Figure 1 (spheres, rainbow, N blue to C red):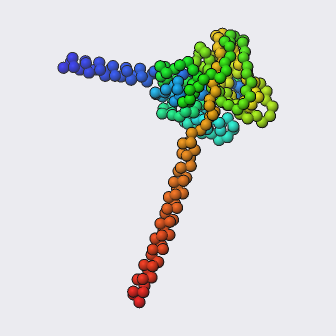
Figure 2: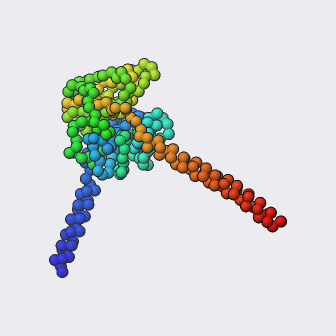
Figure 3: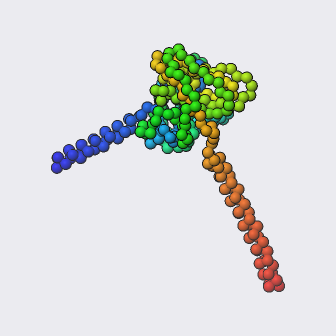
Length: 295
């Protein structure tokens, strides 16, 4: 009897240890360190359901601010991130962490062919250094060393030479487009360049490569802008830009999802009104005939 009790206890311990191991398993997606001036923010993207990524579990992110400061941590889908960037009302996908020196959050069941954005914002009065890490389940067997992207099979449109410390490379964007780019050999270093129609003259935009990341990682520039990447790391990096066909195109389902509930309510009200009118018309002859019979 004791032996069976020992066997049962061993099985319970093995199951419990396996559960702890699974819960503590956080495969690295990417991470870096941001230097945020007062009022500044920086965005980092996570791209789901692509040819090169397959997320099979949760997504985590962790942030740590050098004391004694704190930052706001917000997580957006594409529509709300664009609203946030334009200074409009935006809704994070979960309650934001506000003025925290460190924090951890996670989300599950995120789907879609568009990127999600982790935004770190310094709402204080002093500069802050923020170390952040994003974890996600990735099927490494499908990782081909290409940039992350949606379902399209992206190809490199332009590339820099290898950039050693203090080296720089620049290019001028002449047409509206959206590019996603990455470093080789560090394929977890990624960025986005969104080129929009020009509304006037624009100056050069500088992107630094430091702490194994691009800063800023997500930029939107008008046509005619020259973007210059400068490597401040002691490692060799590169910039490899892949053109996204059609740019950021919101799926029709997202528009339909916002209109469909209103259309259903309108249709239901119309049907009810039509039934009431029809019922009233049916009652009029019936009431008249009964009155004549009684007379």
